[in-house]
Length: 492
Image 1 (tube, rainbow, N blue to C red):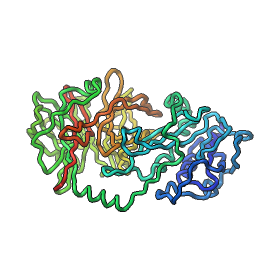
Image 2: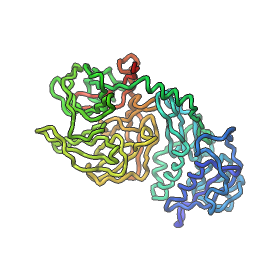
Image 3: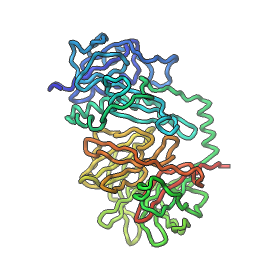
Image 4: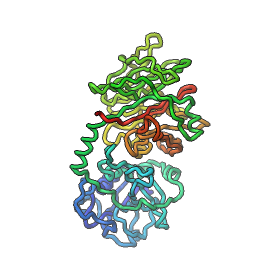
């Protein structure tokens, strides 16, 4: 790479460029330290859609309308001769006798079902090609859910992955080119993930009406369960025992998102989301649950914000701090508990101007980290990360945000925990539906410039359980682990 910047060329289809390819080129050109030196016009080998795509990101435009001020080069197999690129991004799927220093990059799309135990979705990878056409180095990957009767899907996978090339180039241009080598490892098989374009699955009006009717006829009820074992034992055993489920839950509400406050002999006190069906209202309550599952007491937490959920708890110097989800306030806020009165008082905002979903803090390697998703269409898929010198900030966004795009294992599902010197992060598995299960991730890299984790355990509710339809929070205190379970019920 020369001092003028990282030199990048993009190969586009001369007969028409999908909108998302234009987004790839524009995001590359917007990077500091990167120069988009050429657009190579080629006859694409990718299959063309038979009908006009429903998603705007897949609709085509003239190649002359894409970054028109960037020089054009006519495609030839030996395009490398007489040209000088550091990276070549091939969006047309052509054969190139080209070996730039950082390789030829290409997207691959595939049916996500084989990668998610049959759940409908799309698997995506950004490849660096190798001499073996059946193997490539994976620079980035993700999994996006398709719309199902139980959940909405990603509207446009293409639009979500268009920034991936720019994100990888940003690491190289920033001097962290080793990060790509460390993260990617050896070449992997490209089987099942070779399509040049994502699927286009328009939602018919009939399906939309059926989904609306189905939602009207049923409702979700969550409850709380206790497991007489710490989370480290669950990880070691590789399975979640059937919890002791809450008894005597009022029929007009559900309880979810349990965070343990204290273990008190034969009872456990937990802070939970308390959602009332009529009128639709949610807030936070503290429950006292006997170890036999009996609900002994429920107290509304009126000094915590209304419409809050996911009451993340942090213990610091004998003080109990709650950082609930308050995305409607466009902020993540912290509250301290008065040990004498049980009331909460505001400490201030941790993050403002960002609609934080499920804020989860952890201290690791001398820094504080905040994991979350962002309220919106992809709040079950795209993981965001913030870093700070102290738990109360100042919080700075990670340069690779969103650091992960995977509906199977992104959205936080409880407190991170350490065992054997390794940090683990529970996440929701929303591949089939919101909160269908939990994935325990092992964090491999966590620095101000890098993030990488890998799934090590999947926890799903038993089909024979009285709460068989979901599991989306897990937390542990002392010798008890608390979870929540879902049952989908008919309204009438």
